[in-house]
Image (tube, rainbow over the protein chains, first blue to last red):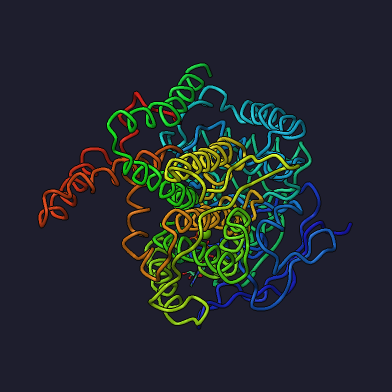
Length: 259
Length: 321
Ligand SMILES: Nc1ncnc2c1ncn2[C@@H]1O[C@H](COP(=O)(O)OP(=O)(O)OP(=O)(O)O)[C@@H](O)[C@H]1O
Ligand SMILES: [Mg+2]
């Protein structure tokens, strides 16, 4: 089976520090693949490279056979590769619903001039965006808070809103950076179910996450980074028994990897 | 909807009927010059407001007002153009220049962008002093008043030179242009473009992750802003019939920005009200002589402390939530 995303020899140096070092792996269509590793291993940097927020020092990323590294982020998004942020990154001073509506930018058919003049096409776009935003909000269970100002939301909802914004762009490949951080057990279980539903919608999901029980439950495959290098790749069962992975995590906490 | 309509009608009645009647009743025709200035300066301030709207502090609008003024003056004096044609051309010239300048500098944020724009005003003044075509410190003077506009042999606008009181004509012209510019701004802000600009203002990284071409959008907003600046400068030199390197200085650039703060950054009509209050306030304080600047600055500081979101946040004037 050919991969939808191919990462080849990807390297990123920040001055003397090599944050991502010669990392290669492939992602299958409709797969949930998690990237794990200790703090500072280079996971977020890897995501920024894949979504074109950073330019690689070496190597490349291809998506559906097309090279997407070195593009501007909005072009990568247009091609269907969209990332959510590790921090709760949202439009703070807009309502929840407006956050999701504005994120439909990529689906606009009318031109900017059309939106300015209020053309028929633009009005149709507005209606479609509003409908789709409502659909996404109810999919993520956020309808009750849709008129709330985003900056007033509790943490768990902020994460969900970040994902809602990502979904509004109709991505093919969604990169979620620590989507379960700061959630309690129940919230995490709900979010895990939600990520599974994303896959049912046809999305391919790449996930960075520290919550190992969630990672083991949700992932088809796992890639492990340590000091910027890939040290293992395989199914959750393989990773849990991998000697190098255990060693990499030993310095941290024994139970961190769910052993 | 109807509330907005009533507001618009009241506004139109005030500027087109009440103000001229008031001036006629008091015989203070010099006030036309005051209100013309307010209208033109509020156009330039509207441009600054738009750059605030994409999250950039712009202290460089004086540069474009000066540039627009010189473009108009040079085209009229050296190339024999009609005043009317120089207006759009001055605006477009400034917009084009701002695209070239904006691409590199709009990447800067916060105080860095503000500093560069501040320097821009000074650079433009020095250019005007140095270039042969701008005639150095002597400036360009005796610019003829606007000629007539006729369409199919019908005179739509008479030759300003034949008018008994061209001040009134300039007042009407400026107010109409101001209304047109604010209408454009209002529509821009309330359309999807405005929402995208707001996304940019709140988080540029996230905006680009949802597919917004942030570099292009920033430059577009800045170009419109500079168009307003150039247009305002061009009409200004028509009204004063002269331009000097000191016609728009750093002080003006700062004032354009203060107008926006005072009126309210959250309101499209903030810069209009801010310009009116600041301009009239400054002139009313004229009689206080040496204390003018002191009183003025103190009043500004107090106002900003009491009303950090601008005069329009007083509520009853609220146009935009
Ligand atoms: N823009 C940057 N400039 C310099 N160094 C950077 C930059 N971004 C990341 N780094 C460094 O690269 C390394 C990898 O960082 P990265 O954020 O990718 O780690 P991470 O695996 O996501 O960690 P965490 O689990 O804490 O989120 C770190 O040492 C970090 O300090
Ligand atoms: Mg990270």
